[in-house]
Image (cartoon, rainbow, N blue to C red):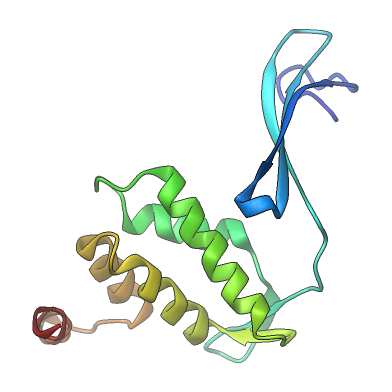
Length: 150
């Protein structure tokens, strides 16, 4: 493993432990050259999952892109990174459990909103406003009223 600090090859593992409900391994590493410590995750390789975008194009599923969207929606909210990572894990797991090699952005968005809504309603509204492409204040109002009814 190459050190992200000094780019020297050959870090050593200090600690290993299961992560993400046992589906990956978290490793703490140290560079013998500069002493920099960093974390890596080891996951099993899965069958590629393609995402069908709204325009019909396809691209590989990108967990980091999903996580970035969650981070943006929860910006300045009391939602920890651990919670957002767990939501991303659950959404990816739900998408893969469908047993398909392709999934629509609409399905992924619904999975995210189902997980995000009980965690933080403001983050949920922010995510929904981008995902559902609210065009005006009335669309926001309708979504908030539907939340209040539940």
